[in-house]
Length: 237
Length: 225
Image (cartoon, rainbow over all chains, first blue to last red; front, side, top):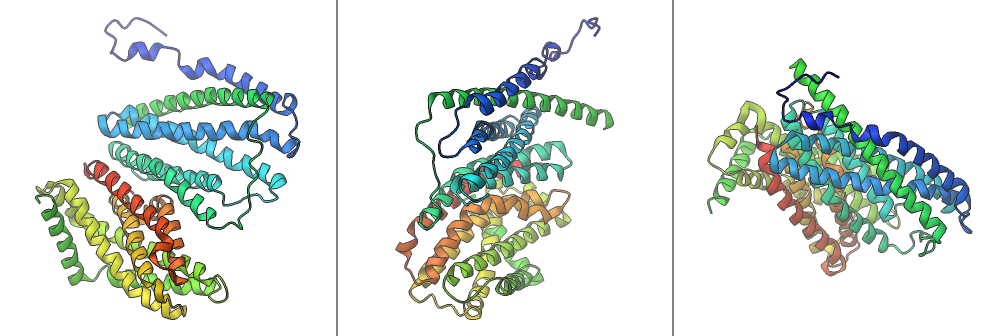
């Protein structure tokens, strides 16, 4: 990297900072390894659920990150409509893609646990249904983006869907809860103990921390990819 | 007043166009009838619990027919750049939204009014004392679906797929309205009165009101060129 440009454009100090994903990538991978070890070896075995319960240390942090990611999409979408600045659209789509990946992880790890513990892979429980609808909403968000070629219009349209979709989620949850609540014959879902033993809670919190780092890595990396892509679009235009 | 009047003019224009071209309503009504027909081959339509199955069939028909009509309605608007004319006109964007919402509501409710008696006869259902609940639910559920559909159809027609993407965008967001509508309709078909489904109607009103606000706030950005 040559440093000879004197009249640097205003963005250049930020561009020269080492990007966050480069700093965090290796520590995150290491912590993920520790998390898997802690979940499989250090965590006590659940008395009722047996080894299946260990997937909880991946499942719950993934769910947490998925919600965080979609909240970021919502905030970025509002900011895009308010300011019209393209960087907010870049942030929204980066977070939406990462969120869809984590939602997929939630929906793959959930049934793996549910099969031995509940006896079924899937149950139309409020949380499961809300997560599934959430996944569908953000899949449609990504589908919409791929069908709108104009960048400014794509940013505005997806922001509208990012806002409407996020506000929809609590209503989905409420509707499904009432729906199942009116049918007492529905399977009563084992909630597990209300209090988690300290050893389990520590590993869970460590998992949430590690997954938050993972989100930051993936989010900033995806932002970087987005910047490269828009640079490419500008060159081609 | 200055906002409502242009909205009414736009809705009246849509109804007048429809009276002349008959582009939307016959197709939408026939489509809804076909959905009910196909569903009655696929699902058990007799025996215990058939009210629940019938309620689901009815809302599948309403939803698909409504989406078809709303997609058509905005597609017609973007042909010949009609929408650009509306945007350039002095009508504020909220009025354009309300106008399209009103005409979409009229089209969808008209198609439903045509399909509902046929549906009850074909499936040998008699709501009896549940009739008021059935009608209130149809209007409240349709309102929610049409608010969301009008907003999203304005976006869908400006994509590469035209209105074909509308169901993909609208159905996930319509899930709460669909659950509430199906549940309240099931209660109605079982002959229950409005009070029996009050929470569902409350949810439908809340859903419709919230998305009306979201749509009014975001519609200007959808129209922007």
